[in-house]
Length: 172
Image 1 (cartoon, rainbow, N blue to C red):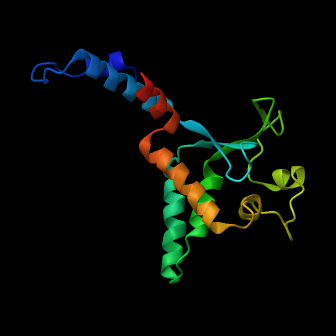
Image 2: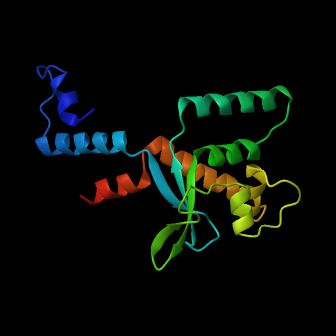
Image 3: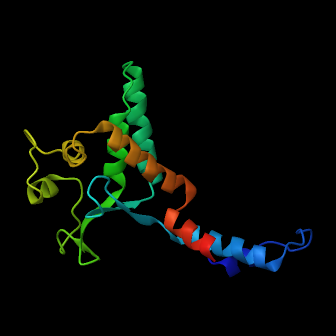
């Protein structure tokens, strides 16, 4: 819904008299948040060479995640890493590498995610079948704290809108 459509649906009487510049900035920000559904983030430890595109979690993904966490709690296990891995896996739209200051897909025909194809491309030392969790943990050097920190960065983006949109907005 555009700003104009939203503005037309509400009566204007009784609205506080705010400076139009502030209202315009708020409306622009609202529009940015409504249209920004993915972001690109560097995978930590790769010095900007590896980029993930993440999307905002859907209601179905949130419900699936809630059930996973609830199941872990019912078995009296405190498990922080698997929900973090699952969030990153579920929200990953695709992975890219940087070359000549350009973001390039690993496979131009379809998105490569945290999967067996990425494990093969990067020749990852994974024992057994390369599940998404194994691939992601290997990508992070089996450093669970790095996974948790990156997951927190992604979760912050999802709850705060987008860091890039916010940065752009602040610079105006």
